[in-house]
Length: 190
Image (tube, rainbow, N blue to C red; front, side, top):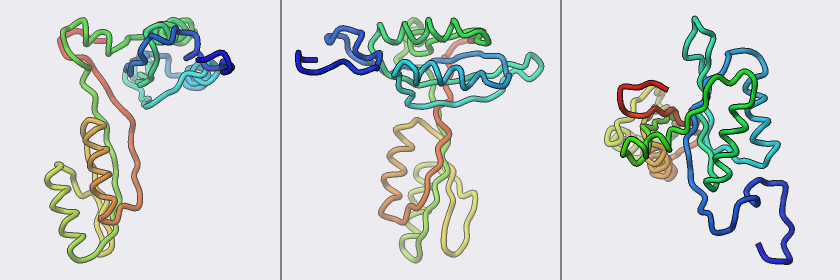
């Protein structure tokens, strides 16, 4: 930031310019009760943090616990602030930086997967090419008419991105993505 730029309300300006922004996957175990997700999201928006991916689901029905998986980007200082602030939210039981844990286990990243539904409209050769490419990407046909296909694909976000890009010229009309679900390798839990 030069002398003529004014800092924004974003927390990204707190860290020194030399710090490199990194993408991290956080897993947050919370009480499954109304308003919890809004408080977690409010923390991010109120401090100018960005969420690249967000998934939420009840994972322990008997204990009424949900798992929020958040992919965010920031400098190491900003990422530490995010984790510390998440831990202070009352219904949060645990915050784990899956990326840091993967590094500690000698791995590059946690296991991350995403599901997408992709609708492609086409006729003739485009239909045949759509099915051929879907097969190559291990996508499943979950709905089909003489006018369209809806394909389901699971994998890393980069695989989903590549599949969507390849489907565009074949008649892509709609994409719905779940966001990233992530877990570390090894026998220990979150």
